[in-house]
Length: 98
Image (cartoon, rainbow, N blue to C red):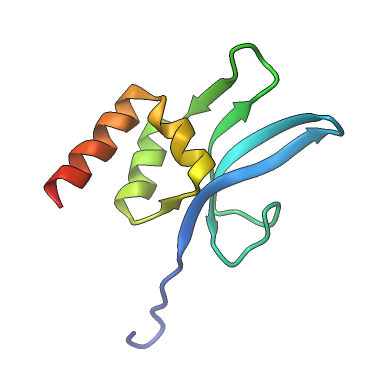
């Protein structure tokens, strides 16, 4: 690291919101050292497990951008991303070339 440069370990994880017994989650890019519901870098989508079927809304361009920058999704977020065809195809094409 030179001068003022530093690197963050960024994760894509769930940020819990909603009332007691009625969870609603934001999918956020966050410094891995922060708490689950701590300050995050960017909101990249939402996940509502109470809807039938569960609703996942993603900002695909932002998710792909964070993945390209090296952000690591948690297991839960990874399973949600795999259900989205555009991101699933992107993840597989990147992994196949590296």
